[in-house]
Length: 341
Image (cartoon, rainbow, N blue to C red; front, side, top):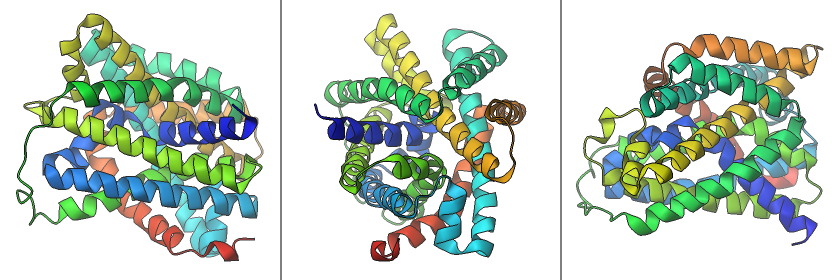
């Protein structure tokens, strides 16, 4: 495999790993945004996948052309300096909130599935994140290149082993949220993912590499969303679990269950690392401080917020951030690439 296609796969893996966080990996956010709407949810997933491929790729290409090192520079270019600063503040709040959700999600895995205290799971994750962050962008690419292939393998296993329950196409036709949720889902995730996609776009040598990386990333996300949707639709009382996907995997035996928990943990970790990386780049562009000190401060604040609890954070923050991200989605969607220089 030549260097170009290695870079394409790294971009795709990093894109997938950034989007697939605690809510995705555990199944909670997929149920809230898609599965509870049955057949319409499946249509929404396909539409979301197309938007992920299109808009994620455009964000990276714009960043490549304007050589934006951080999402602050990207938003200032896209929205102008004054309004861009407001968007940057909102983005920073989003990243802090979601970083806290990721930490809280790791605590939930240790507590609900392994019987290990919530607090210990979070502390272990903080230590691992700090070690990975010491490698900078290479650390972010490395952890995603390791975890994402495992995620896709488990998605394939789900796809071929679980029957999709029959649902009536007309069941949720008059629920307006079923139509809005795909947009909110993509908007929320892109508002978060730009922290990684922007510097990633800048670092790549060729636009063609970025284009194929973005397309494959969107395709991979679509495959994972569909497989998780099918699995969640087969589980009764799905909304009563913090980690419904782990309940589904249990039927495959203890070894597969433990391996899947490891994959879920890795999925959460990739998003956590990506968020911390983006926040670090943003803060460094404002305040000149040692990178390791910034990382420590970010993790400490996120730890405090994470003590609120996984379920509470997820149900409150995700829909709110979806509306904030809509502005970014619409702006990038209608942005003419020919003007980015």
